[in-house]
Image 1: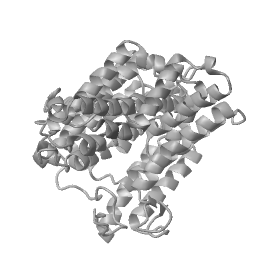
Image 2: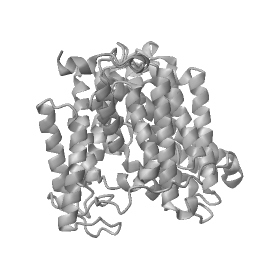
Image 3: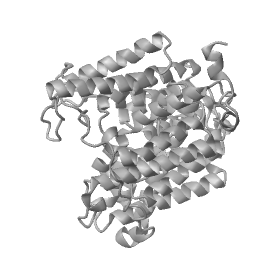
Length: 487
């Protein structure tokens, strides 16, 4: 019997529960996929504390008193529990952690408002999660998802592919914002690639591409691990050092400096758990302002997850003929619980991560991969010094490669039909150009409804698509609306 045949053989109750063989996967692929997803997401354990732990609230206090280690431990704990929950309940290769963008909005757009405390801000996150959970349990969120045309779902997947590609290129320093000049972005520093971290990124990227071309299983994971080892060696020999917020050492490492830690194990502190006030924000800023903030959080959470789970399902070949993943409701329930758990854990809303696509790229097709990722996050609460050695430049090549894989779905869009082609185009380009999945989905939905109306096909528009289009118009106009209301 061949090695491939032995790998694909069912493994008893584990295989039956997760449908590993049924979905064309193997235990080895699920393990590799879970590892790859973890390594591409692990940066959040370092980055989330830097975002929400360094911004004073409206009373001048820092979250957890400014203790970033506490925030890191709670970030990993909540991500671990939720990723395991996604694996067990939804059996989907999708991991969760604190949402980037959402955490910045919570820090700069909510907690820093005059009179607000971090507990008040986290209370709004919990409130938003509870509302979304109700929408899921009543079937509303799933109904909206099923009302979206299949080709728009495909466009969402392609757009997210480009979105994670630019995330990877920006985080690695390949694409940067120039110090001055007429263009918004440029190649490297001053239009040129330079610095040892760039070399690490390029070596890891092309190593993954070569391994994939040679059909080597585990190419993405090998690229991340190999890139990290190379980065450690480069730092030991050349003492590259980190980039600084002031712009010094622009060719340094983008986030963590890859060096072997003095200790591998540390004792986690979870004292931040439960530090939220569900309704304290109403007294601080008023009910109208609270409503608008919750609405903004909710809409971003609502559609980011929709796009993410479609993109993962499309890449994994798990979508049905209408573009819907299996166990849609269970996926959405767990994701809704993620917002509640993130707020209750004091680490901001947790949501489904598009970086899970790196695990799918390694062959993951079931929730077992999510469980592996979750267990690794739980271990990270004790092993945070070890996770910190993986630099952006070693992890982000995986995002670029997965972006390429997701881009291939673009052939599923009928580019000769203006009614779908133009909304699909806006969906695709808005995501990377605005750095927002929500903005891309909103642009596509509103345009699709508009073109249907002007061509006399309003009767083909699902009532929920009308509602969603109106909500997105409110979302895009939220700032002037707040100005008119004086909040």
